[in-house]
Image (tube, rainbow, N blue to C red; front, side, top):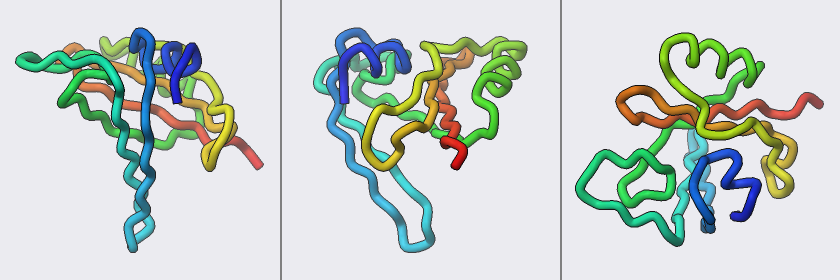
Length: 113
């Protein structure tokens, strides 16, 4: 993944990402991302592309309401909610939000079927 879509969602400048999706025997899914740039050691990562950056992805029913709720608590959206264009999560709306402590959470709203 990369390009304008990923920049708009994550706020990372010129992102290029390799992705591995691993499904555990209990059904939980772990997505591993490797950004090609963004090396910033020695501080709390405030960019999804930084070495050592981590985030938790949560599935939500209404991504816009979830963003409004966390923004009311002092968090901010890093980009705009956009649909994933292809792959196993095609149509899923995604957005990253960040709190005052630089913790990043990704909201994912699956498409209605």
